[in-house]
Amino acid sequence: MMTKTDPNTMPDMQPTTEQQASTPDPFDPTNLRLSQSFVETAGVKKLLTTIPVRRPSRQEFVRVHPSAEYRENFPIIELKDEREEYIVTASLVPELIGEFVIKTLYLAINRQGTLFFWPVRLPGPDGKDMNWWKSAREAAVLAMKDWVRIKANMNLGAYDIFQPDGVIPDPEWPQRGFWELIKIAFRDHLIDRIDHPVIKRLRGQV
Image (cartoon, rainbow, N blue to C red):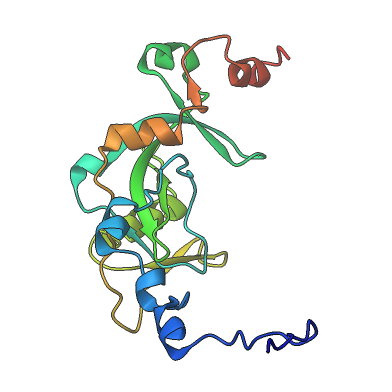
């Protein structure tokens, strides 16, 4: 005699222990962990596309590259209102006497690893040398060996120079040449023709 199956009764479909064991765990570490070879080949390289030209702020400790190859004197036109510095090419120097000053551009770095060029005035053609300029040069020289912080002292007419109380590790300098870094910093701030907009502005032609 055949037994009729109740259509409302479903067979027990619970997975067996054997089935559970064969089902992969999506959170298994081998499912989630990247291989070391992938990590090594998929690293991200940070591109150096901007290098500011500025004084150190009063709140940051900085270092200056110790090599003489990473500093140079340049004829600079400074637009003080915009706080912008422009390099004048050597061929234009005779035509722009009186418009530019000579500054040393020191390659510097802060504790966050941000590179910048620190422009420091040299004495003028008449030998005039202000305490602001002298103290800035002294700070830059000290920063070649140790971290320094500068703060304007208006009563003194010069920068106060501070060194850290603790030990700060030496910075990691990029493996890039000085002139390559200058090109990045001044790619839009190079005066290479007499009809440059900055020259027209200084002469009242615009």
